[in-house]
Length: 329
Ligand SMILES: NC(=O)c1ccc[n+]([C@@H]2O[C@H](COP(=O)([O-])OP(=O)(O)OC[C@H]3O[C@@H](n4cnc5c(N)ncnc54)[C@H](O)[C@@H]3O)[C@@H](O)[C@H]2O)c1
Image (cartoon, rainbow, N blue to C red):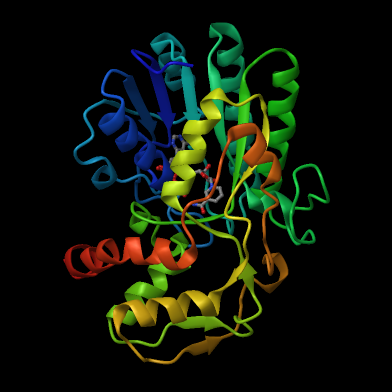
């Protein structure tokens, strides 16, 4: 698909990944008409104490496209999206917090509204590229492969797995549906996710404030596939011309939480050691993720470009800026 003069909706565009996409199109495809739809944050919280939505206007500073504050559970918002007549919908809006316990609200927001968007795509022949998650795998054996041993261990992961199943149903009806199973994404734009921001940012800020990074006990053995935001944006672009399907979006390499703490201390010139704390999420925690990205490579022509070392190095100036301008503002 040639992107000239195309219309693009980005749901969740005030969040981490959605805003990175919005800026990317602004800067690289100024002929595209981009509409960001997001609920933005309020003071409402879930029973786990975290905000109900993390969207923040600061993520969109400098963005030149149109913005609509709206809830994807609301028919007025859905009608607005349909009337915009997008060629592509990037669907990033979700309850993105894996520790939320309100199953009703989470399933409604993540799954029901996805069905509404799929129906819109069917009616107006739009392509939808949506955010799935490594949480669909739970503690499935590594390397995690799409369609194998998916056993989510929290309602968030379950909602994403059911989104994948639903998306494939619509793909069979002829709708262009690409699901990207993001693994652990880190990078610019995640600060406003508060406690749910990546561990790279959290350790970075702890180190900059002169404290030893706080790791869960056994962190040298807890490994995840950490993927830099720039690789995720690239996967989203490549998805435009990919056949319908579900694809892992990751690096294909598992690294430990201890690795992150060590790389950060090296990059920040610190030697603070580590503090070990008990893992409060032990029953719903993923201890080892590593994506099988063979299908993604073939179908999307995707190649991860950022190792953990390079990604963190690229991110350091932004972590320092956050520490100076946001945290201590
Ligand atoms: N960041 C990661 O590591 C990661 C990993 C796997 C999957 N994902 C998925 O990627 C997508 C983007 O994640 P993110 O990290 O940018 O999270 P985020 O929380 O920063 O972004 C989600 C955005 O959706 C908005 N939103 C929430 N509920 C809404 C509603 N009802 N109506 C309209 N907008 C609403 C929020 O305000 C927020 O701006 C999500 O679907 C998430 O589940 C993220």
